[in-house]
Amino acid sequence: MRCIDVILRQFYCEGVLKDDYRFSDSGIYYSVPVNEGEPHQGYIDYIEQLPVNAAPEVFGMHENANITYALSETHLLFGTLMQLQPRTSSGGGLTREEVIGDTARKIQERLPIDFDIEATSMRYPTRYDESMNTVLVQEAIRYQALLDVVRSTLPQLRRALKGLVVLSADLEAMGDAIFAQRVPSQWEAKAYPCLKPLDGWVNEFLQRLDFINKWIENGNPPVYWVSGFFFPQAFFTGQLQNFARSLQIPIDSTSFAQEYPDAEFEDITEKPPTGCYINGLFIEGARWDKSAKRLAEPLPKVLFETMPVIYFRPEQNRAEVTEGVYRMPLYKVLSRAGTLSTTGHSTNFVMWFTVPSVGTEIKNNRGLSDHSEWIKAGVACFCSLKY
Image (cartoon, rainbow, N blue to C red; front, side, top):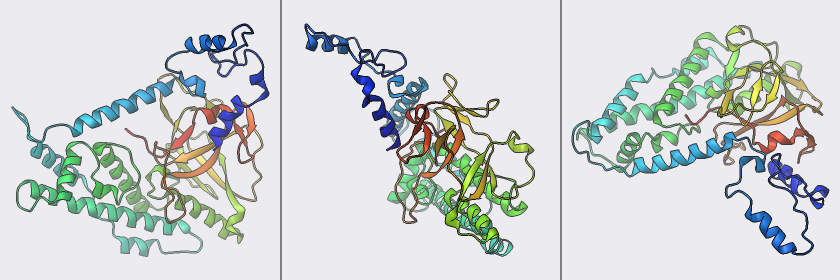
């Protein structure tokens, strides 16, 4: 709704009644002066001289959007070609079964030991003043459920490929997915949203497990890798809950303000007095200008950049910022689309937060201060990319 609202403001305004009103910065798209003699032909002539393929700037996007589109089309094409590969191999090299078995073996060998959920629950018991204990135990339970599925299905598939057990429909589908570098559906059913191919998925999965393991071993980290959470909404709610309980105030009266410290992730060794430092976010459609400490236009051919460490500082009855910020949406993955789960949360959207920026100040569809340029460019942050 926010994006549609801003786009329509550009086309439904008094300016369109004036000749040469520009719909884009290039001036290719403008309000055509009326040809009094042949008005119909005048409009036809203008339409015929327009580019066959509209440039991203007509929608308010950066030229990098063309690269993103081309990459998406290429991935779709090669994904289809992978699925059309023959199941039998001819000539030299490894057979299809050998490739699947070797990949399954390598993944199995990289899996860490299981979480000791009982020991973790005892070390981090449920406490009124520390909601992060509950968040940690719940994250460990979710990751352990996924780890159980991965650990149990890989040996079954390897035995089935050797003919030691029956190759069921589920195992056959799992083998097809591994061969095509896709995540098996049995794993996806227990996993977090992720668009990466199999190798990237496994690498990220191991990084997430390592993040939880270090948290268990070393206690609450000074900076949280927010991309490592199975359910990041619970983490942010837990931080607000800690703040509300420390002051004995309703949690509904609390919200986050954002600050952007100069320190790098590695240099932060202590937790803030309230709230949390986070890192691990990626931004699309813009970049963080470290010197100016605000959003800036993305560099050519650079589709994504990392965001700096962000301090989420909880406040009570926080007044809304009235100027100089962009309302940044945070998603788990690049698809942006999600469904409403039984918990009342989206399976993809996480939250809104503010980022300093300059641009055309507007009141968005929610009546809040915003910047139209970044809305039309689709600027957003993500916990995980596609590669």
